[in-house]
Image (cartoon, rainbow, N blue to C red; front, side, top):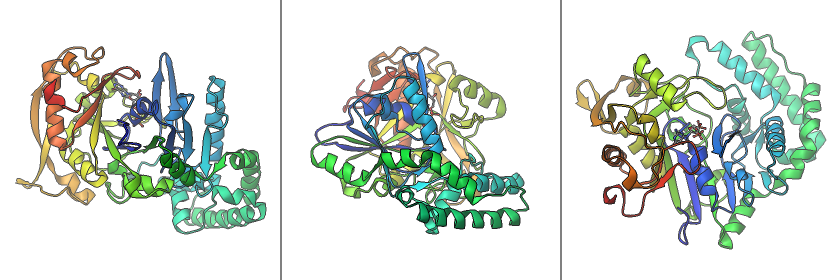
Length: 437
Ligand code: GDP
């Protein structure tokens, strides 16, 4: 995907997250000199398998598994310093050299203990109307950021300033907790002593990540911008309010690391060969429970961060087309094709209907999306093991035909196909495309 013409590449999830971005980023990171996260926080969970080892990364970009790549957390990321410390310790224990390889933006906001307390209390108070947040404090941290009351990494160098921000934040949190009739309370001193544990580590990691990326592109380096969650969870373009609190789509990559949109050469959207979502909200192609459980077991569809079972469905063409539009996708990576290996037939939603009439533009409210009826096309299954295939030509004809239909349904050329969790279980599609195989 990287080439002389493609030096800044964004990888985004083009469904509801959990598309297998971690592995795709890992495969592409081999050629990157910098891998950077631009939004979200430790609510993301990428799983990367290297040989027999499995790495679950919540904050640190998957590029860390290559010894050369520098890994950055841009200004758009919200950083839980204790999670970061744990993740770094875990990687070091497993022999990964981190020295000089991680940089965090001074402009990035910190997730503090009271953000987590608020997240959990607010979700509890929603009762049956839960959003399905991961309870990691991400939403409340972004709320503080937008309200201009957050604590940024760079603030840590000034303890007095840090205490003022934390004390105000703790007071506000307690007002909210009392309002929710929640018993939890926050103490400024306790938060400050927790901050003391991580302060010097955070200051040591500080970098001007935007400058660094711009400079790297200026000298011909290769920069991979790694999205978390997916387009349908974008705070503007997703299924609001069942969304995450950040801009997950490709435009957010420029803002979230500090480059201009014109610096981005390519946007790769990652989709599963089917679809899943976790948490509440509409999912038009959701499978009935018996079939859902089969796909869930075959695909290991349980959250990397929370272990929650995901809700599986058939590939949703309208979602893929919409995600392609709002991200400006230039290519698609299809993951987990192998999970469908044992199905006699596989379905694709090629459109939606509402009250018997075709739906044109993608619905912009959850009520409308919840009411649509998918129009399905049934493709024959291939009933063969694809995990050993490494070229398009080795895939069964029916699997190739299915991929061709996914390409048409999403209106975006497929460039990568995943047929297993391992790094090597990847097929590169030549520029000639699927049909040429
Ligand atoms: P992410 O957040 O988008 O990276 O998604 P996850 O971490 O939930 O990754 C999905 C899971 O699928 C991980 O366990 C991966 O190892 C696995 N995975 C990724 N690509 C493939 C694939 O092509 N086939 C199979 N069977 N598993 C895959």
